[in-house]
Length: 432
Image (cartoon, rainbow, N blue to C red):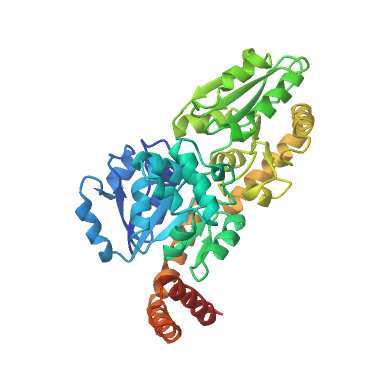
């Protein structure tokens, strides 16, 4: 197969960049792949030496060649900064779209502000006219619409999902929801992949003398339960020797350093800022206990958590979205907003004191990654699904033609919505 592949890549600071760079070399064992980038030069030498790379922002005419490929693969996330061009390609071409997030509220709000066009947001907003009026008034004032605070109520993904030739997600949570959004579009759940690090013996954690390394990884935002974690650690500070590392890019809208001062724990907390993937992995290898919480989900999966699990690091997570699908013996789950402070404090205390528990959870986590999240497994699943999507095309052409004929019988001027509904119904019948 010849594949046109659209994705952020390093030096773009996106988890999807790391995801693609780990996937591409494995995927290339079963397909001929050409990479399309949006106005930048990839920095990874392995990638630049292994693949032909085209800058479609600089040379937009190159997109006319997409018909020459067997399939187009677009990696779609919730950041307009890194997925602007990918969205534009995916919304105007039949592509296999990988939804790294279910809800795209942030993407469309950023796009609206960059293009200075409120209709970009309003056209994606499903709901009655009063909803759009409220959103339009907020946008006119330069504010975020109230719907922005309810991303799962207004996921803004239906048009893009319906346009897709196929959809790939990383969780059953997202698969079931997108199946309802885009009936008739084939969807495959392919587990988020990570490389398996070589494990080194961990230094035993003790409570009298040696410091415990506790860490959270990834972009630092208010929605990741960091204030809860800091409060819990502040309560444990008089009793245990530990240091808490926040490894990831800082956020100008969330002052985590101010929080550490507020709770009197600044001397026990270090914020690294953005680090390379190699440094990210080195810091994981030095971590004894990890905290990876969420106040809410937009359908994301956490590569940070998968890397922690691959390294055998016991991790406390929120029982929400994709995280709830992880077996209970591989992570420690707490319910968001339900006695979270007391629970995380109790679990941290137990993990610090109970070495056997840490080792058992870490071993179970690594075995899960070994069994279901290896890169070669993800690449094989990609190739199988793409082959399946290609094989459906002759049937889909027939279904589209038949749908138009049936729609014409019911009205002299059938609209695209009616045709899409009939096509989905016919597709279900032929695949049952």
